[in-house]
Image (cartoon, rainbow, N blue to C red):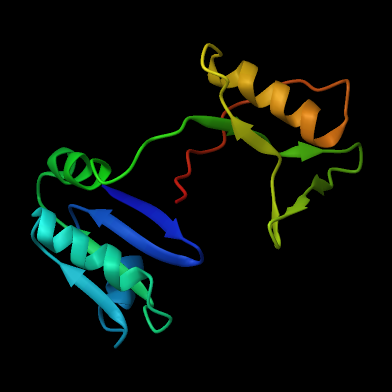
Length: 143
């Protein structure tokens, strides 16, 4: 299993396997590979992420659930949802915020299921009134 988390544009991989897509990062001189899930090791990785020369990070452990739990305890999880919005020409709508192009999405207001949150946020951020939900595309993590 592999989970990719972006810190700005720098990926950190949580994994219990080293597949070919991760292997190429392991040999980059500015990438960090950590094979322990102690708090000091994770704190070290989080410290390195802030450095401009940091390229990528890999946290590996054969117990993926234990690895996720150890990493996640350093963050507060905020549920959000959004969507890929296409027009009749099958063109994708992007919004520009905080200096980056992104898909419309936002925070769950606490009592919504993900689909309700996604529809509300897409309406709020795009001004569209006729929005329908499709199938889930993916789950992403951001810091």
